[in-house]
Length: 212
Length: 212
DNA sequence: GCTACAACTTGACAGCGTAAAGATCAGATC
DNA sequence: GATCTGATCTTTACGCTGTCAAGTTGTAGC
Image 1 (cartoon, chains in turn red, orange, brown, green):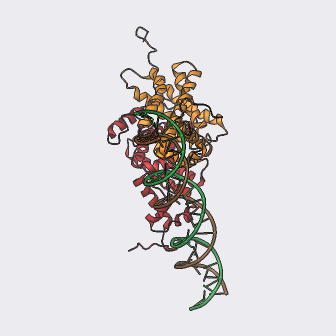
Image 2: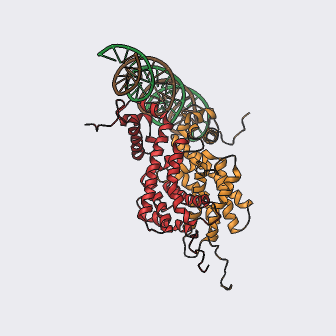
Image 3: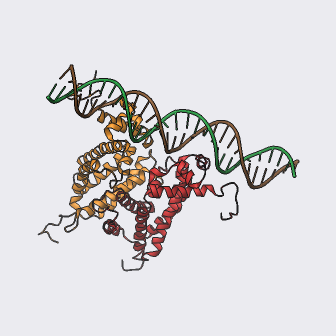
């Protein structure tokens, strides 16, 4: 019946992971309000106090779920990067599209991830996976960082633009382009907004030796 | 003792407004977690069930508080617009700076405003004041809307950029520029990010008859 | 004076997060 | 093999939350 785990330290097997998965499921099905210690426990088949033991309370559980969400988030971006047009600008726009698509497909998870205030959270949990998820952005922005400019500036420009659009879109702020049914309208506006990134000059096109 | 109101329909005077103000106060002092129907009621000096009567439950109260917050938000932007450099680009960047400053000065209120999903909320309450608050953005973007382009596109570009930066800054995402103490670092990164708006061509500079 | 109605209060309920104490089991030690 | 130890999980209880139903109080119209 149960898959034989290599280690079965106690009753359940791997309760920690099961609780995180239950949390993700609750979040996706019922939105942020549905994520509850007691419901997580019930879904995982344990008593209501078990989660607190593993995650040190609800904030800890949310942090763990956010970390799992961030991992999936990164996969969305990397997949889009690999599948899209293989030019520097194509890759840049691809991860931005992956950004939006993840948020569209995982609304509650996206809100959980970015609702967190890293400056006051026990950041060790998220900042590791955060740096891990930041790498694709850094990689795709690199071709557009002018000499003498900090890469963080270009990264902040791109991140701000795509995160702002995604957040506003998700909260229904763009009149006419927020109907979840009309995905084409949203994608059209998204492309138009991302056209602002065409202003980023691609570096290294004029190599030393070229005629300027 | 009490200021004589023109209308004093019942015991309290103007409980509705008092509850909203109490909610704002709770939000600013204790963050999102502190906003509670019962605490609002206690702060306004009424019984714990009184707010539900006026706002139809907690979501209604939050909506009313968000509307009040949005009004203040708009004032921040308009003030910045009036006080800043009086050029089209100066006004545009001024309201963006006002956007960031409001969020910095009213963290919880900002999260409440933009945490709302307008597509599922009883939107009548917020969409009115939303349109009212949207006007400054529209006004400041107008000089940068090319002929034949929908103004919504430019507005979405600017809004996405400034909202994304503000959200990421507020949630501590920019390593090194999110220390609340180091306001200069944050402002520096903000200006660098907003430099992307210099790519927006100002329309109407080359009037018909000018040389090119 | 009486009625009708809106503005609250009171009391009760289920669900929530949290904490303390008890039960159960795996593995090390003797 | 018996015993100890510590982690894992359950049980119980507490205060706080939003919501509802019923009762009370004040206001206005007739």
